[in-house]
Image 1 (cartoon, rainbow, N blue to C red):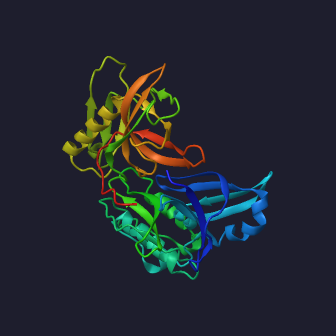
Image 2 (tube, one colour):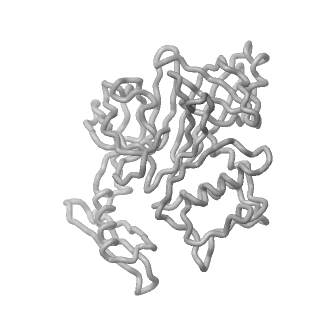
Image 3 (cartoon, rainbow, N blue to C red):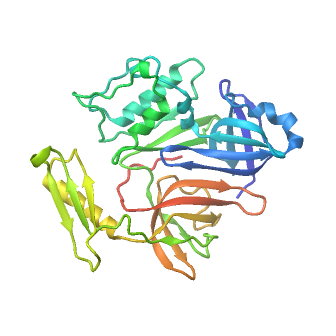
Length: 365
């Protein structure tokens, strides 16, 4: 891995405030449907000369290695803590937590009826960035989805008198099953400027990766536990679809597998066909019958999966072999956290079991 560089940029003018900050104890990463975070320390001897370039509300901060941007976001806190000066930042989407719709319906863009939530997310960002001193230069992907928000009876609306937080509006739009998903990213463009981006994915973010893998004794450097839990297990799935009362669509998929009967309900209020409902119930039952999950691994830079070779949402193959278990399975990366150091760069990955292999375009980050 190349040497790391951390630099700051003025949020309004684009001027580079400091080309190479002498930071230590750096840790940063991205997450699914969230801004991700950045933390670091500045030694007391460097504070006087550099504190002005780390002011909240003014500066962006970036992490770069191998001439590639690995992370970027807004500084939210910079203050003394103990014997060091602590710096905290978060990705671009964190900005929406400090912005409100005070015009109503995103200044007339809404209300929305049967609208793609990807469109509403782009409108939220457009509204935020059209206000004076509110333009971060963030570009939201042109991804479209089959999901819908708002009905003729109950349109999706944002009322000015409630002063809704824009970040909360986005969170609501990505919270439902089957909704689009997002993460934050940035990269250098050919002209040397920085592109700040919200990566939108549908039907889910990321891709199934067969070109990288994580294996104990190769690039996994800790001994992660494999969790076997009956909380999510089911061999019978009861699925409900559209309709009300006795007119509700209904399907049950059940198998006898030598375990106690365990049931789970799958509510799909927009599904109109019993055949589709049955297939979805069968798929959910098969998913719930699989037990065993690795929730977190710490990995080192290695040709099997160089640091930065994955993106949030990717499914990767994970093999854990230790004195307790021998496990191999597919896992989805929902968050990462890089810990650069002079000795050895490494990253901690937060994982979920990969149960679905339906992907949108992974895009380039």
